[in-house]
Image (cartoon, rainbow, N blue to C red; front, side, top):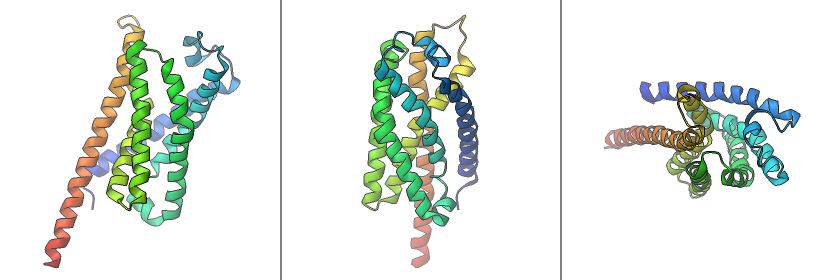
Length: 223
C-alpha cells in the first residue's frame, strides 16, 4: 500500500499535468494557422525565415502534448497491473516520440533559445538528460529491472514536464517592468529543471523507502 502522502502528491501532480496539458493544447492550437507573427514566434523573428528551424518548431509543439498525456498513464500501479499490454504500447509511443522526434528537434531549437547563453546551455542540458533518462529506462526494463526502469521513467517525465513548470514560474513571478526578459527566461529554464528534478528525487526516495519496508515485511513473514 502506498502512503497517503505519496497518493496525494501523485493525484495533485496528475491533475496539474492534465490541466496544463489542456491549456498547452489551447496555446498550441494558435499555431495551426502557420502564422509566423503570433505567440512565441513573435519573439523569434530572427529565425522564422529559416525553414529548418520552423520545421523543428512545428514538430516539437505538435508532438510534445502527446508525450505529456502518454506519460500520465505510466505511473499508476493499477493501470500497469490491469493493462500491461496497453502500458507497453503507450510506453513505446512515449519513448519513440522523445528519442526520434523531440530530442533532435529540441536540440536544434535549443541552439537558438531565448535567454542568451544561460538559456541555451539550460535547454541543451535538458535535452541531454531527457535522452539519457529515457534510454536508461528502456535498457533497465530490457534487463528486467523494474525499479530502475520506473525511476528513470520518472526522471524522464520530470524533464518532459519542465515545459509546464517553466510556464507556471513565468506566470507567477515574471513582471515585465521589473525583470529583464532574457535573463529571467534563461534562469527560468534552469529553475524548471531544478524544481522537477527535486520533485522526482523526492518521489523516487519515498517509493524506494516504501519498497524496502514491504520487502522487509515479506522477509519477516517468511522467517
